[in-house]
Length: 111
Image 1 (spheres, rainbow, N blue to C red):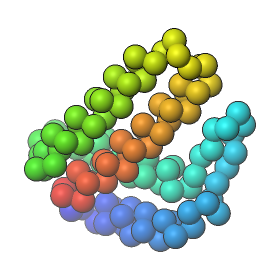
Image 2 (spheres, rainbow, N blue to C red):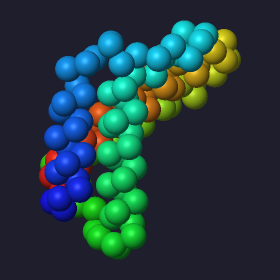
Image 3 (cartoon, rainbow, N blue to C red):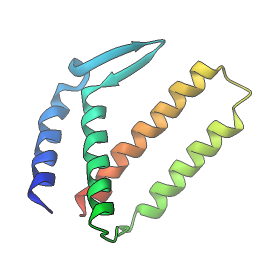
Image 4 (cartoon, one colour):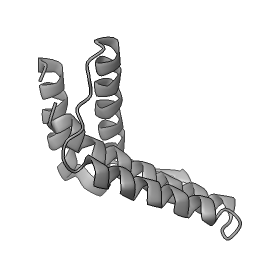
């Protein structure tokens, strides 16, 4: 694991205890947490680094279950497009993307 990613990972674990203290209300029930932002930056940086270096991304043993869960959650959102208001669908999709970002740490950890 390159040094920059080790630094990112350490920062991530230092930010985690802040929890709700690093919370920013964007309005309409949409909330951004410092944890979510940090996880997103780490995962996007890792993906960008892997694409630039043309590294092969290895899929660990639990990746099938992670992808299956994400797919079921996404299909659930698609099925319920007419059942919920756009605001509710937005919030639901943000929870799904938050979960995907946190699940991405599993891939990052095994780098």
